[in-house]
Length: 118
Length: 109
Image 1 (cartoon, rainbow over the protein chains, first blue to last red):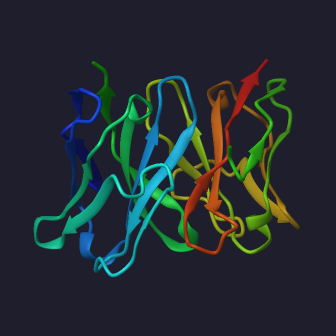
Image 2 (cartoon, each protein chain N blue to C red; image 1 turned 120 degrees about the horizontal axis):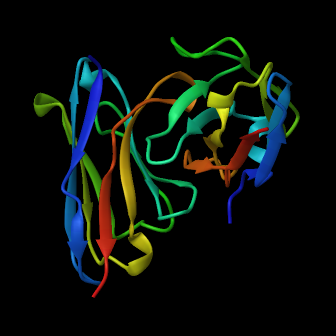
């Protein structure tokens, strides 16, 4: 079964750090670009970051650039998001998603909640 | 603010046809993809590319595009289609950044 499972969410104070992980299974992880997408409570989807299959190309939304770092380990079939200098407005469910042709996201994880609060 | 604009809410009578639209300059260069999201669930891809449906998506879902507007059409809406729908594409800067529309809440009456 093709699956993505996020972990690492939790409660963190403003200015703190958190590292999210996304474990992939059921497909050749190293062949796909991967993305992080977040959704604040009661709000819409927001694209956060993407990384190409070999990590050659990395992109960030302006809202997280300089604070978040996306990475992957193809040997471990895993995607990561290192989040530093967290703010209240980073509070959201964070999803990892597989990118396919025409920039579409065909497989999504169940999400992991990140709460930034003092 | 989103570079892709969607109507916040749309309603349709059971069995009728509804079109959900997404506007943005980047849609002149890139295809939109469409996602269905029900409460408490992860989004599900329903349309991508010119008009492609992933396996398992009913054929009542279709996509089209003209100029700066992409559309998702549900022909013969069912009660289970009630959900939030989001469009997604690249932004208009040319920097390969992703962008989502603000979402459309579809109510099936």
